[in-house]
Every structure is written in C-alpha cells, then in structure tokens.
Image (cartoon, rainbow, N blue to C red; front, top):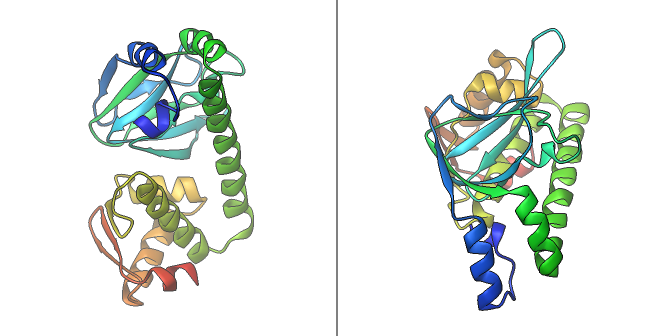
Length: 218
C-alpha cells in the first residue's frame, strides 16, 4: 500500500496527514459490488487485499469485463471525469479496500506536490493499461491474448513483491474470455494447450508459469 498511496520523500507531518486521510477501510465480500456504474463518485480506492474486476454494461444489457485490480492497485479513477462511475467494481474474492475521499485528496495534493505527481502517475498508468488492452483485443491471436494476460498478471505481482511464477487467478474462465474478447471454450482450450506444451501448470484457479521465456515467445 505504501507504494500506491505514499510517495517517497514525505516529511513525518505530511505522512501523518496522508495516513489520517486513508485510515478508513471497507470489506467487500466475493460477488459484492464496491460501486456500480452510475453511482456518484466520492472516493478513490486502493485494493488492500483480494482482487476486484471492473465491468461495463452495454446498452442492451450485456456486460464486458474491462479490468482486473490486484492488491496494491487503485480503483475508481473512472469516476473523476463525470463525477459518476462509468463502470462497476465487483469483488472476485473476499477483499478489503482503503477508502480515499477524493475532495480531501485534492486538498492534500495542493499542499504536497509529490502527492499530486503520484495521482497524475496513477491516471497515466490507467491510460497506458487501457491502450495496451486495445492492442490485445485488436491485434493479437487467441494464444497471444492469453499469454499476454498471464504475463501481465505475473509482472504486476512481481512489482508488488509477490511471486511472479505462481498465483491464484480469481477470475473465472468466463470473465477471462469477456476481458480478452474470447469465448469461454477458447480460453479453456488455450490454457489446456499451454499446459500440454509445458508453458504453465493449472490446478483450478492456481496458475504456475513453468516456462516464462516460452510464454513470452507465444
């Protein structure tokens, strides 16, 4: 959480102000929505434990999984532009989030320049992530999409001090398919093919990357 919420170089007084701002937390049970599309935007959130998915609804009611948020990552940035959340955030497992009131955060950003820089970086990271996802959906084959997704989760885990080779992927195969623009059957067949090739080992939701270089070359 410190990497996400607490930029380097803050004084003791500044850290105290920031810790006071983000001291509240909330539990979100598996399947429960932290917020829904159209809800009023008041807070940013940081995933403290567990994982969340973001979902957008089409006009005809169909839903599209638009993102996966792991422990240490931010949620809620989609609400800044219109003061309403553009998507829903749903817990993939029992999770906890830190609540960061946006109005108070903006005031703190005016006091502490490094906090404002950190907020800008979070916004920039979101833009880059969404641009990369557009490339995945528009340019890559089914095998390349699944490989890119597994490598992305691996790298994000490593950045936060977790294992890059083994992790529990709480997304269902159906959610993965929605996120990657593939059918459930194609996702399942692709993962099975990767396992037969010795690239990964899957046991339910547990994923172990056996051949990292091979996965990168898919």
